[in-house]
Image: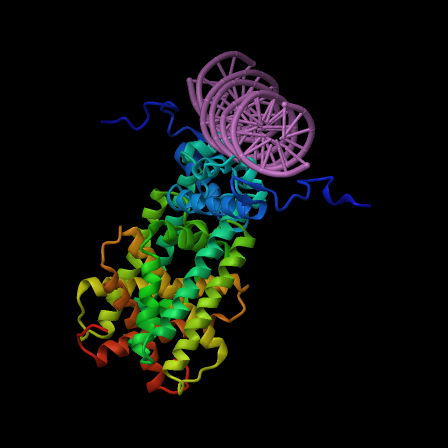
Length: 223
Length: 223
DNA sequence: TGCATGTGACATTCAACCGTGTCACGATTT
DNA sequence: AAATCGTGACACGGTTGAATGTCACATGCA
């Protein structure tokens, strides 16, 4: 049974068209779709955007949408993951690049984060549109915020290694820190970016410093 | 201008039907719709719910939906405002009822809040479904979280009156505190309520204590 | 009892969107 | 040059849901 190509597009993976082979063209189209998704989801909103709208913005036809994504939701998820991964990478390198001073490290991380969120489309996709879509997307969101929470937990531990805490509490407090950072973003976005980035970074950092200081003072008891 | 009733249903405001007058029946139907909305929006999700679905759950026909609400979005907004108002009222009375000890006050407030969020439908509507729906709903959300942020600012000020801060920072930090509390809720919900309420309350309170303590220690400077 | 009004069940109209299909044209290979 | 493949424009059927309308029956009022 050589049924490899009955159903869909036959083999010619390396045939070129306008200078590029199949995989390159596919990747380019996929990338265009992600760009268009950022624009549409980030301005009109996910639920106000149709597949057609995405394709129009991408300058492609619907066929190529379904070539790369099963449905609109898959595109949203891919976009979200891309934005989150980019952010995480940049935060990690910023933290590593900063001087090994705790304040400098968290400042670098927060600065990268809020710089990231200065693009309103990015902020909207990753903080508004992503929520309440479906259980699958919820799970994806949870996983990503969880990663950031772990990152915060690591940084806090690096800053204040003495302050070991029960993991359950550590987890909740880290989630709370992520939430604080996230909510400050939402507030910032919904206010039309009234405050400057440095003010925002400072306010967020205040929370970090506060928690670290608190833990350093009261070594290991609840409340 | 007594234009209360120009367009649609003529006068008979006090004609009774099954024992109740028009306004009472309307109020009852509206209430049923809100209950149904909590159930549908809070389980299936806002975007997966149709007007028909709401009406079916409420045991009413679509006509009565449009009697009370212009569209689905208006119902969501009304539900959200109702839930938020209830919460705020209960928090205020809990805070006033608690002994004038700062820890007891914030504990009382947080306990009421997380008790409120123990109903997953409530938590989902007010923390997930409400986001990314429309600019109007965003504005509504912002207003409400802003109210809670102000409440926090007041409580923190009551706890640590010495720690006066520039209002801009106060606003952002309060937003951050709301965000922390909110995100802890989201984490809690998405984890299937793995932690107990008291653990959650404690973790949130830790953040409060940390910020208050931080401010008390370092009176009035940035970072 | 008769009549107006309230109500419930259901039909209807209209629009949007998804997913697929068709077809002609441009690019590439042989 | 001819055959094949990639692409773009657009049409089509199917589904869903919003919003309104119809009609028979129940309830209250004169």
